[in-house]
Image (cartoon, rainbow, N blue to C red; front, side, top):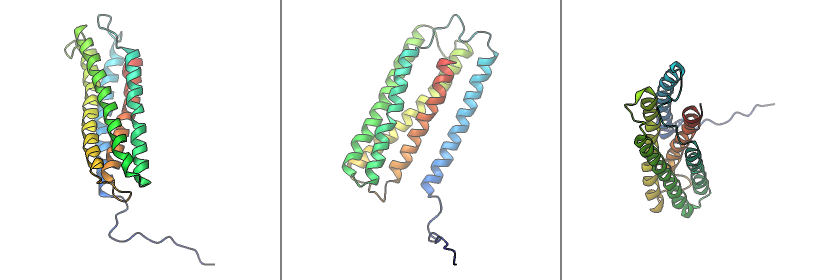
Length: 196
């Protein structure tokens, strides 16, 4: 009995596309950055006798929990946009990507309002390791969300112009991977900073 062997891909087709490889490299680098920042936060956290310091304001847990639901929920319309483009339903993609971008902007706006309130109550970058580590870690995440929202807006414009097809939608797919990374990162940061 002869054994069937799967045919090899054409010689000009790499096993991993260049866009996917670039995204893997980018996310790996970003993961290393945040691993270092989380390590910094944990060193300060574990070395402190009391955390947060008694003279510092408490972080708004209820508001941030709701805001976390907004960020994590934003992945749903983006996943639906990917599913729609793969099924050839190109008319449904732009609206779903725009919704994801709007939810990302809402997340940033609420976070900005939270920071403004915390600054008014005395929690600043210069108010010791607690304030400094909070703003560096959460602020770095916010910058990544802002970059991802900008990318989503560009992808939405391309989708409105009909640039994506079931066979050609790498920009949407890579943007989605980055958005999932940003959302997944928040799943780690939220309990570490707000609950621990």
